[in-house]
Length: 76
Image (tube, rainbow, N blue to C red; front, side):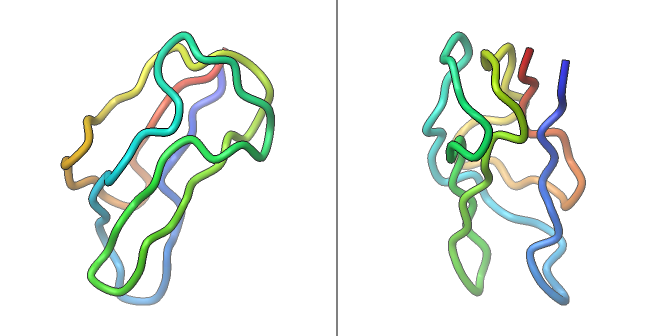
């Protein structure tokens, strides 16, 4: 299983809010597909799948605030 982590988003940004999940558990994704949109006080960002596979689990729901480095999802 591959973990998708919340990447560094910029200097001084330590958290982001999950705005929208594009992929749900059970969805098949390809490397590079956008799977989640994150919002900070400065901008909105998309996080992409890091491998081909199926979304097994998401660890936060829309509206949750997550820290940089947190596991967002698992792809198998």
